[in-house]
Length: 143
Image (cartoon, rainbow, N blue to C red; front, side, top):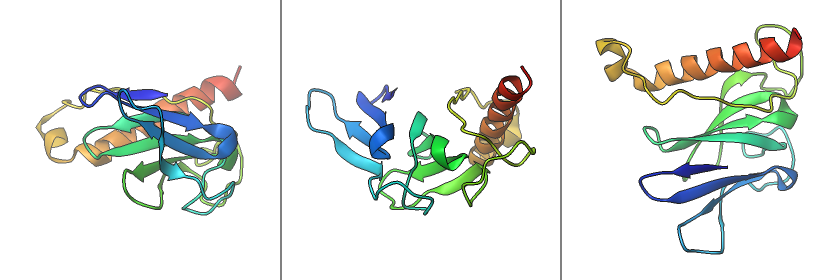
């Protein structure tokens, strides 16, 4: 679950229903924003999305698509995700390019590393997300 601070919108990962829902402040009914097409490996499906992060700059969700062994970006209003890290074919593994049930997600909100980052924020965000996730998986696999 994550909250978009400026709007007060709450995003909730509904992992057993393989979807992410959005709840506006003071509204009880949610709106589907990602997944909702059954469990699966298609780019319009999620499989047990456990952790989510709302990226205000790109108006998208970064999702730990746990059952599909990958991390994906789902832009709000679109019907498909794009792969950030892991395997497109939902195969688990322990190589540097694969995950095995990623269940956590940490993203650092500040991207003002250099003047270059101000012009190319999205690629830097994806790289930073990948590095944080790689460190998380390394800690889980190596302990």
